[in-house]
Length: 376
Image (tube, rainbow, N blue to C red; front, side, top):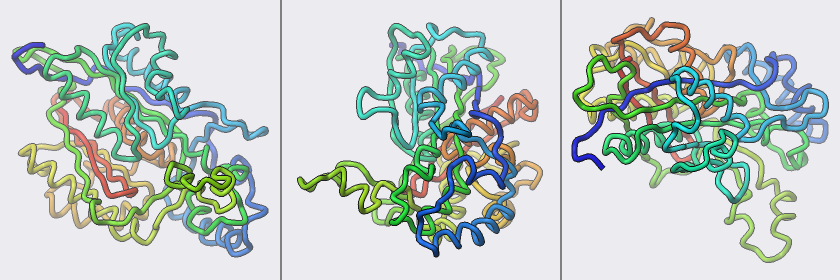
């Protein structure tokens, strides 16, 4: 490895949304109706969830589901592959040029082997380093930090970073033990969506000139050491420790359902996103009102956007036009949203040469946050 630290650039971006857009009035038709859920849950879905949709700012989203059979059309690696190929195409690279593959997701295709090698196989890469990071919305920032550090020290020359979100695996009516469903589990069907985003990173010499897309720093943190989780999904080892029919008990008790503490998210997600980002600015010695042109944040609904953004915009000294709610036609794809929206920013020409951007997210599962800072 080189004794001189390299610089790192984003050479290509890509994203992928599966299937046709699903408008708000078709969500239940695609995911399946909750005909066996408790009456209070069905009533909640018809009333409160409908109001949530109307206030969300999301007009459509995508699900990796066949609209008639409701079979999944993509795996985690299957969603990741087209996003990765688009990033490679923009960079003018081939899969065999990749030295290091990193993928993050809130779930995985198999208990083993890891999804990273399944993506490697799909891309046709005979040999490379690989890593899978199991995380929700903070996963992309974690992968970016690992890749950035590895490229900086010269361990690798190129790294592919991908986040793949397959929410619909947990949202189909057939997945639930509907009799055990609660209201928040039903509500997540009207918030989450499927998609994948990717970036291709390259190491360049420290004295290189005119480096476009330079990654200037990364950051990640967890403040959840003593805080309860605000997003939960069972079915892991903790739920099968009992020797008596462990898999059956997971289903019978509904432990496999994806759940969220909406009260905690509504109260704390916005502040913890911005406070984490402010700590990143301090660590990287960045002044947001002076040094940042664009912000890409993981805020799932317009209501949360309006409830949380104005005060912090004023505190950070930034302008409203530097921010956009970008989930209107993609829906909220968890950690993948960051790279999907960043890819939109790049391909639309909004991020111009010489401008800077911050890409940052918060994960409510145990209050982690992470992101990166770059100059285009």
